[in-house]
Length: 193
Length: 122
Image (cartoon, rainbow over all chains, first blue to last red; front, side, top):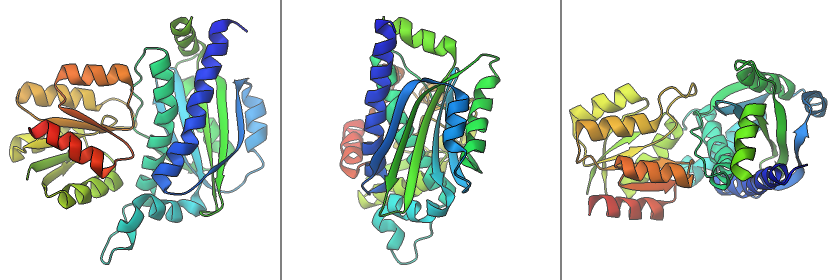
């Protein structure tokens, strides 16, 4: 592995480790990071890891040309997560809850940007991620949808990071994935060299 | 007290932000969820201050930087505070150069918002 490749993995790792803090802040709840993998893992390996979970999940996909960030959260915990996100406003008399999907989208927006901001700053670059595109399905289906976003470029892709976090209080878990094409990865490596 | 226009595609953020602004003593005169509605609302409402999100669409076609440019072009004195999870240093430099008067990171903290507004309307 080259020095630049090691530096890239280190930067992603730093961003990923900050994402649990961001999730805690935005959901006002403590989260435990239970599994992190930072490497150019194959998609089949990732699919195998996600295939066992049949429950419906919200998927928030945020993209920039050449990379897709995905955050997956169980749909069953969406309401509790939304209430946690809204804080004391959610229990005020007469308060009308906004759409659950919008609350989850905003949670994803904050968490994913933690990773993207670390990457961009380390590379002296700026990424304008799209607003979260919200989808619902099994984890493995959401993985395929995220990859479909990258396929439109006609390039190959690699999974660069995987982080799994869980919250006992909210009976929820959260998976954050980062995919990128070789040319996007090359742009980052060039900046870090 | 400032008359504020909120531009954000997310209804939950608009709701939270609107509540915070009112708690800080400001008046929310309008809300817009996309670039076209934002420009129309600015012209019609002539707010003292605009809060602008950067990621306005999942397709990535219309982002907040375009809206910022359009607002400044329409009114060189427009006071725009960018509110975004995207706190990248390079981007913030660009936004300041383009005329943004302040920046508040997400999740939004009331103190940060208060301080950014004070700086923008000073």
